[in-house]
Length: 309
Length: 225
Image 1 (cartoon, one colour):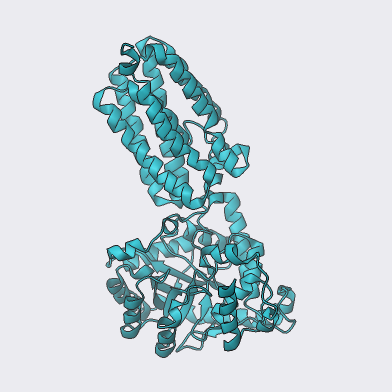
Image 2 (cartoon, each protein chain N blue to C red):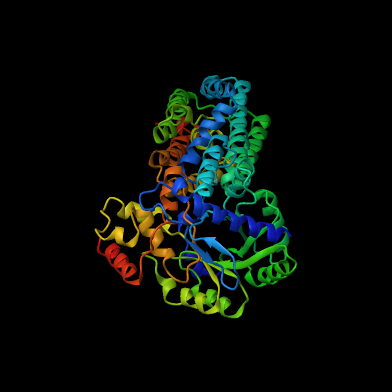
C-alpha cells in the first residue's frame, strides 16, 4: 500500500505541476504551456523528473542552523519547481541529516524520490547501513539504494536484491564517478539485475557515451548522471563566454540549461542531479526541466561549441 | 580498490564541505560559547607572562594552560564542530585531547625549563602569534566574528604552542611535534583544496614557530657565544 500511495502522490504531483507550471515557473526559457520533462524508469510505468538534486558538499553543513534553514529553502525551491529525485550518501558527512531535517520542516517526506547509497566495505552490513540512513533521512522507505562506487558490490547487491523482494526498497543500483572502473561497471550492468546506474557524464566528460549509456539502453537500466557541471568547473571555464546564437533553438537560455539539457537529451539518461547551495542557482537548474530539448544535431553542435571555446 | 583506483582520486574528492561552511565553524563556536572566548584570550596572554616568571610553579601553570588549550580546541572545535562535516577531523580532535592530557601530565611531573635570557623573545613572539594568527580566518571570510582564537581554534593553538617545544624534557619534545605536524599537513591539504589561501598561513606559521621553538630552546640559549 505504501508503494501505491507514493506512486500516486508522485503522479499527482507531476500532473499538478504540469497544470501549475506557468505560475510556478517564470524562467526565461519556459513557454506558458511547458510541462516538466520526465523520463520513464525502464521496465515500469513510473516517470520521474529529468532534473534531480545531488547533495555532495552542498548539504554537508553540520549543525549550522542558519545554513540548514538556507538549504531547506533550496530544497523547497526544488520541490516547487517540479523536482522529486534527491540523491545522497552516508559518505557525505552530515548531508543526510540535513536533508532529513529539511524534509520534515517542509513536510515533504512523501514528495521526495529518496535515493541514497550503501557505503561500507562490510558486505554483511547492507541492511544496517540502510536502516541508519532511513533514520537520518526521516523517511519510511528509500526509493533507490545504490552501491557507492562499487564498494563491496557483490555482497551489497545480493542483500539489496533480497531487500527489494521484501519490499524494503523499490529500486536498486550501482554508482561510479569521475569515469572510474567503467569496465567492471559495464560487466555488472551486463550480468546483474539492477534498476539504476549512476555515473559521471557532461558535455566535456563523454566517455559514458561509448559503452555505458548504450549498454543501459540495451539492458533497460535507468541512468542517473552525477557531476553534470564537472564539480562547478564548467561554470568557471565557460560562464563568462557567450552562449551560441542558436542556443534558443535548442531550448537553452543560460549555461546551466546548456549543460543540463545536453545531458538529459541523451536518450539513455533518466535524470541528472546537479547540486547547489543557492536558491537562484536552483531556479536556473530547474529551468532545464522545461521547454524544448536539443535534437541530436543540436547536441553535436553543443559539444563542438564548448570544445571551440 | 586497486592502487590505480586510488590514484584516480584527487584531494577534492576527500574534502566534502565548502569554504563557507568551514569558515562559519569559527563564527559559530565563538557565538555559541560566548563569553568564554574572552577567557581564551586572557589565557593566551597569561601564558607568556607566566613563562617569564622564574618560579617553577607559575611555569607549570603556563604549561597547564597550553594543555587545556589543546583539549578545548580538540574536543570543542574538532570533535564538536568540524567532525560532523569531516570525519577525519573528529579523529584529530581526540588526538588533540590526548596531546593535552600528556602535556598536562608533564606539567604535573615537573616545571618546564626556563629560557632565561630568551624568555622575553618567546613572550613577544607568543604575543604576536596569538594576536596575529586569529585574523587569518577573518581575512579569508571577511567576518571579524570568525576569529580563530588560541584555545578554541586548532590551527592557532597548534601553531602558538610550538614555541614551547624547546622547554619540554628529552624525548617528549619530539613526540610533542608529531601531532601538530600531521595536523599542519592535513589542514594545508584541506585549505589548498578549498582555495582558502589566507588559511594556509596557519600551517606555514606552525612550521616557522617549530623552528623558533627549537631556536629558543634552553640548551641553545645557554650555550656560550
